Amino acid sequence: MNIVVLVKQVPDSGSERKLDPSDNTVARASADNVINEMDEYAIEEALTVKEAQGGEVTVLSVGPASATDAIRKALSMGADKAVHVVDDALHGSDALQTSAVLAAALGQLEYDLVICGAEATDSQMSVMPALLAERLGIPQLSGARKLTVDGSTAKIERQTDGGYWAVEAPLPAIVSTWDTINEPRYPSFKGIMAAKKKPVLTLSLADLGVDAGTVGLANAASQVLDFAGRPPKGEGVKVTDEGDGAEKFVGFLAAQKIV
Amino acid sequence: MAEVLVLVELNPAGGGVRKTTLEALTAARALGEPSAVVIAAPGTAAGVKDTLAEYGAATVYVAESADIDEYLVAPKVEVLAQLVGEKSPAAVVIPSSPEGKEIAARLAIKTGSGFLTDVTEIAADGTATQAAFAGQVVVHSRVTTGTPIYTLRGNSVTPEPAPAAGTEQEVPVSLSDQAKQARVVDRVVEQKSSRPELTEASIVVSGGRGVASAENFSIIEALADSLGAAVGASRAAVDSGFYPHSFQVGQTGKTVSPQLYVAVGISGAIQHRAGMQTSKTIVAINKDPEAPIFELADFGVIGDLNTVVPAATEQITARKG
Image 1 (tube, rainbow over the protein chains, first blue to last red):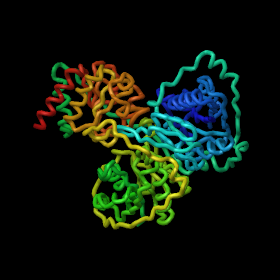
Image 2: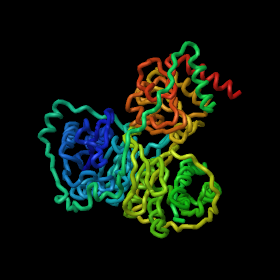
Image 3: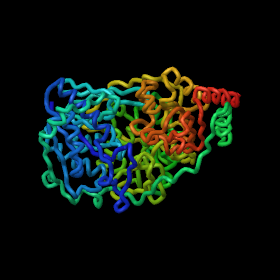
Image 4: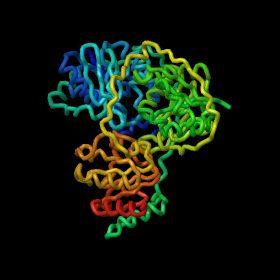
């Protein structure tokens, strides 16, 4: 079973994230960059399938040179090797363009299963499995809280409001995983040491046969015109409960015509 | 006037159109004349077309087939792509559910268009407003290629009726083999709730670590029920096993934007703020006066939730008589 896990490096969602006013893209250079939290569940799931059925786990990432940190993290958890697509022309690419690059990279790899996190915490679009399914002509098994791989079929429980849908498809397929699916392992010291020696293949757009004139900010199908910080809220009212807290709270709701 | 296609999102099991559909029809009117697109099992459109007409659908495209619900996402994309090809609409507006965003993404590839997800407003010139980084930054953006495709975040627009003809037009459904790969074999409901759905609710009452136990979440539920609200939970409460994950509000859970958000026993970590800070009015109840949630709150009560919440529930219930 050949499994490719998609990994994205993102600004830490626990820190203050910014857009770069010079071109309205995510300010990645100045950010505290980490592996997308949701991707760790995808890696764990890939390792679980590999441990049960054998095979190889390849990490695939599109991102700046600094994204090697996120890739090493994935390798230290136990992935076997990695492919890193780096090219200055990619700066400012949107989800559609990134999906075209990922699809081109996947075209050079052998895979039965592609797994990714259900969302990246920076863009929060949750569209990569749909985009890749469309580009590659493979089935989309997105939003999984459970994955079962049996021979040539994958089956997921797609998380829904108050329940799930059981969805199955033939392999190869692309699966995305929520944080309800497993508990990602911590890299062991041995794993961290081993990751340093694992192969990371760096590819450019030319290596993938992708025309640089189709990617990047200038060629995106959508454009950010401007941005601003959310206007600060006016100073709110704060009361200390002295037996009258509930009454004041309900009084506030009444003044807002909520009750 | 230019035609704008609006994909109709339905409640399960014949439950009519979702409020998000009415919001999408309302938002679409900024761009032109909305046409509703019903892509569903046979017999669905008959029950919803009057509502769609009431909210501005001049035309109701009816694409009905038993295959639609049998496969995930892809069938709806093929039907919509066919309609975009035939009608050359000014734009496509889709409710921003997980499925809606996936449909928008695949439709963008099929039609060679750009798409914007989770928009909160669409202006007449096509400029969309989005809340980036979980609401910390307000962004204006536009699609520059093809037919603009938008997914509209729930609760961003107030549905307003604008009666239109709602003329039915049948759309033949013929799906490729590729659309029939991911088969939905079962739909399972685990939590039946009479409460409104989190992302649709106009009031949300959420509990955090301060609620202290799963049993004690009953006081959160009681306050929610007195207000006709949905119940939410912080990640800390979910990770502690107090409440199920599907109710989690925050960065890795649901994003909500109700009229009123009541945060009970929630400190207000960035993880949580990410899911609720665009709420219109925010009330916080917390015993720690330094809790960061108070920075967001329009009204804050520093006190013990175990006394304040039940007392408030009682008073609200009494007012409603």
